Image (cartoon, rainbow, N blue to C red; front, side, top):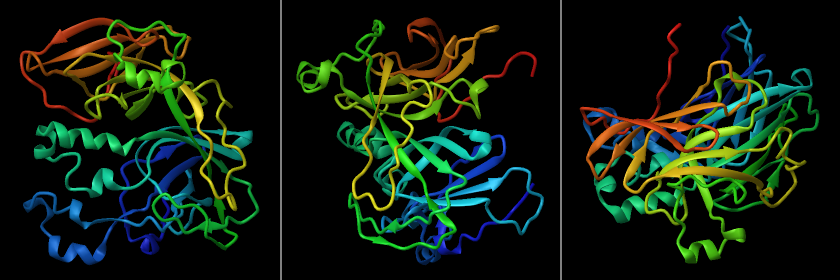
Length: 362
């Protein structure tokens, strides 16, 4: 199907991915925009380093908009089935989304940033000078990407009162038209599971950092999320990602298995207008794999043939061994996060973003 959305009021939004459920396509329009007044001097963006980045602007006073569209629509003039607004944020990657109550409610998980500096800062990702400087690399950790769970009430009748929000400001509400509803959300705070068996290469927490955390646990921040694709469009529990704790020297230090709990765990409370404070985080436990100077790519979950448990399988990641200056394929037990096998490559493979596994029958 097809439909159109007028985005002129948003400028030119920066959109990296979208989500699909049984009935809907979900498009999240964040508060990071390509600024039209900056494009004129940067028409040949591929000819000048970071020229494209310099056209991006963070509009922290504007809400993020969520469009829910009919997956089966065949009308190019049809608009969204439902439109929601929520707090300003930036996202690259969805994780999963599913419907409940006969499609009357949609739950959506994604990786969120408080602002758009992930892309709008020229001294950020993709800058080779930054990647070569340990001090500047460490600054990228301040981005602190977080898993958020959003609830979209497809039958919500009351209008949303949207808020003008500056950086880390809450409140100052204004009325919205009734066609727009508020998308409630709640972040997850990810910490090492003290009850789980710790893999041999688990992050060695400095004593000072560990002592500051309840139970000796340190908060982690994650990106490049993957999960068991058999659970796509359905409630799920485990997320595999790259990430790092606050004490790590770099922003991408290891592979993290996050346990979000069994749904409806961490469902957002009735958070929204006219609340004036961010929602309380939900607790999520994790088990992680780490090895000094080894850098992972996106972890890919592969289910074991005949498996019934959600995390019964392996996790694959193309690794860069910084000490040996070589690349290898890492195979982890997806349940315990312990190393099962490594296979070194005869050539060095540059760090990548996304990967996929294909079975023999494809």
